[in-house]
Image 1 (tube, rainbow, N blue to C red):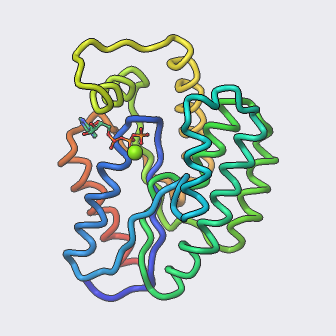
Image 2: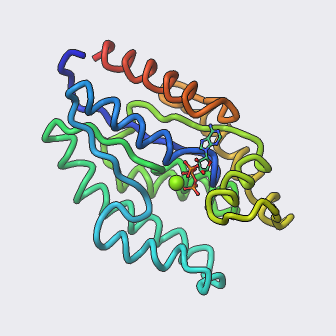
Length: 214
Ligand SMILES: Nc1ncnc2c1ncn2[C@@H]1O[C@H](COP(=O)(O)OP(=O)(O)OP(=O)(O)O)[C@@H](O)[C@H]1O
Ligand SMILES: [Mg+2]
């Protein structure tokens, strides 16, 4: 592939839809083509972010307030932007991020009901003029994503999930689809029920198109 300006690519979607699987594969494909690409994630893409991630993902912190949660995600993003994303892009390194700012709008905005305008304003403030060039939204029914997640996290075949979890993720899924509609120029919806290999090929072909556009 020809040399192009570094791109910023994000993977989004509800928990367990297949983001990490695809983000990793895309980075390997790019590196095999001689394109320097860095795999990163939110929350937790920096040292400070990894402390924040621990707080956010610790089941003992179930009682975290909605705004505390929002500000921790934003704090993580601010550090990630300053320390990793902005300087890497500047150096010509492609960034592949496993979740980015759409997640905050989908989870804290649509899932928890915090003002979308407030979140958009803060996201824009943190990112200044940096935007993802392309966002792959892996979309699938909530039940499928929960089953995948449970299968990954435990060896049991017996799958159990809470109704509350399903309702919350339905809201998040709708939020992501709303975002895709609003930002059609950069968000590509992918049917995440397709096989890992089919999705990988599709993602790579879209990425190549992006490369040719630059
Ligand atoms: N297209 C697919 N078809 C079937 N299984 C898949 C597919 N993509 C990923 N998986 C499997 O589903 C599980 C969840 O995938 P993965 O960890 O990539 O999801 P994720 O979106 O990163 O989840 P989380 O939001 O929890 O980080 C893994 O066990 C993975 O191997
Ligand atoms: Mg993941």
